[in-house]
Image (cartoon, helix red, strand yellow):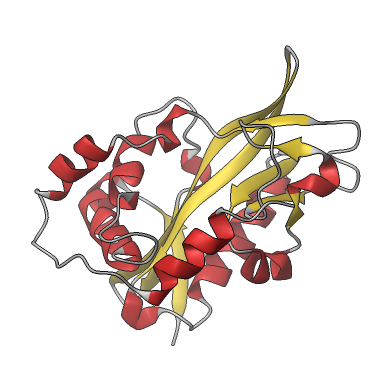
Amino acid sequence: MKITLRLEEENDYETVENITREAFWNLHVPGCDEHLLVHNLRKTKEFVHELDFVAVSGEKIVGNIMYAQAKVIDCEKEHAVLTFGPVSVLPEYQNKGIGAKLINHTVQSAKKMGYKAILIYGFCEYYEKFGFKPSKEYNIADKEKKFPAALLALELFDGALTGIKGVFDEGKAYEIDPKKAESFDKKFSPKEKFKTKTQDIFKEISGKYL
């Protein structure tokens, strides 16, 4: 399967939101809110358009990755970093390396643009193959000053996080109001919400601290 990557265009917005919804529906919780996150993220000043890529098979968009500027706060000092997410791939195209292609391409692009590090929340077992490590290794905590196993960091340059410690702040765009998410989802075709095994795994990982 030939997959090409290109920057997202305005005409892609609705398609990408649908892809994101399909990719995350019932994955972490019954339903999902990641499609609202995508919708909101584009409107923020932190959004990095130059790293907003779609994956295309033929003429069909099958995946997407988005980035935003974030920061690590050490007392009153702020250190600029990147964060990404969601990384979305249509269910029928998953496990074909498309997500990895999106991540590898944009990580290299971010490095060329001069960014120093990327912090995300994700599954360590998946992201470690891209070089991500638990944020605790860099003494970077979440807003509760804890070290969740899901908080991961990647230096884009050797020593980029040396001497940097503090609290990771991914920005308000990643704070989703459940009522707004429910209202936004009504714009899409109805889908059934139900419990899945992946939700239990996600809950377990989310509650694990190092």
